[in-house]
Image (cartoon, rainbow, N blue to C red; front, top):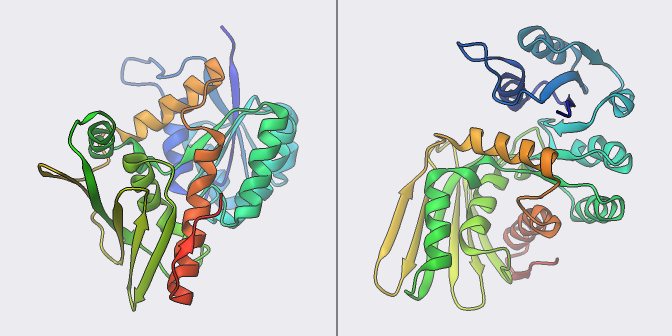
Length: 292
């Protein structure tokens, strides 16, 4: 059985702990969820955070220069808290043909997203990542409804927390959750966006070919909700994270084992274009076409 040596870049993010726990720590019976995987090294900008993760989850090596990890891993998990570093961190691994999980947001710049996707295609490197919210029970349920119902889809509304002035690239830090919830539910082909900012909230209207969906980004609100409107009814879900992390980890490991991607390259990049469009829309007051 092939053994996958996995590196993590970004120990300052709690997601590094979650991945490391899932991969490196056995259950009460001594069994590993992924016996063919091991997080063997960690690096990034925050030495103390990386060392803490390494100690807790039995990671052998901590690197100050993350690029030194490239020759000693078979896969990488980019969990850096600030998405502005995701391109810089992911690029050398992808260039070396190493499969990557890139946490949300994929990047905070559409040109960087396009560049990573083009490189991954050129090197034939599988990628996954983004928001764990697309794996919640509620979003999976509503996504199935939209795909399979014989009722006409009339629109929907989704809400989630946002940190508009976050030190980690502002709007982009948390907005990816709501954006990916919307795309996973209604499809990866939105056409245009209009948006307004009201102090601690942003309200956006996302236009698809035959319906529109509203997004409510709310500062300080911890709940995540989603609803779908059809010609016959309204379907509402208040989301929780039960099982979502496990599905995200399974998708990553399945990609390593099979080379198959859960999302297409374009679907991984579209949330970045979507977030840029929302920001341009509420700053300009104009309806903005989503540029793919």
